[in-house]
Image (tube, rainbow, N blue to C red):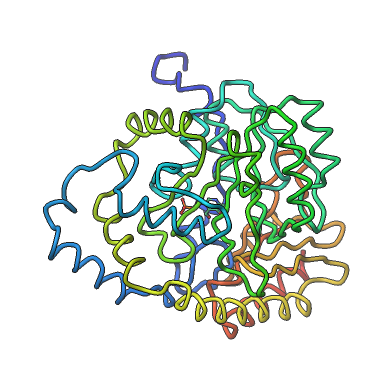
Length: 395
Ligand SMILES: Cc1ncc(COP(=O)(O)O)c(C=O)c1O
């Protein structure tokens, strides 16, 4: 049908759907055990602490909390975001960042601000589907950078930059989504050297680094001051406090943040005033790190149960990552299996996982699949994996 009603924007028309979002509704069925979503465990949310924060804000500043507010973020939240980023090893003042409605909005605004149709974006292969959607909406072309168990391979990055002259490099160096892989400190230095000598933006996405199960703190690549004029660090409260809040931020060079702010006005005017004030109040009146200790211990136990169950339950000849934090394990089934073809068999057997193929920007490996280990306690993880066992045997 050739009418104006069928002529949508070409990039929206071509946009792939996130398999995670498509399985979201299905995975809400309480009869199913879901390993699909990137959802923090709801029973570990500090509901009482957040309720107290919202009440206090409404009691003392209700009118302000209910009102429109600034595009770049409320001063208290910018202050809190700068403090958190500094504690993560990247010295930051409030005027070096803008608040966004989750880091997904940060990725969307960066895409609108930096990318023209046809610009090349380098990314890990596989990578976070919703980031690929955000860049895809601006007509970006993706090229993969080879990785191994220590993250991006520096020589591969160097030659990809030389070959493709990318506009930007998008990386998730810590507890990557979907693989759970973490880039080593040595690699981070090498990547920073390469980017410092290049003419490429770095978009560093870091939602998971505080969910670590070892003592070792991963310092973002953006901490390297040589990159101050070209690095964007996206962060969020989603995985450590609540994704329902929709509060994140982007740290980057001031002249680009100013343009992102103009793009944000066009998109959404602002981030929710009450969410920002409540989040800032919460961070000022609670020791989030102390609370996270409990979350980390529980997630670690859940990770252990998942790895143990997968070691027993995956077919002979499978491989998997062993993440030291974050939310995801990435597995590869033996030759001849197709994870996408098994999804609906798995749902019939009462369990949901996400097939790996849609996460790839090139050469999708149909044998891969992603498991979230945080959503279920060890007992449910064991039960879910035993349900999957029969599906893999048939596959
Ligand atoms: C790598 C990565 N970046 C960004 C996001 C988006 O998080 P937010 O809730 O802050 O928009 C996610 C969520 O799953 C993610 O995994």
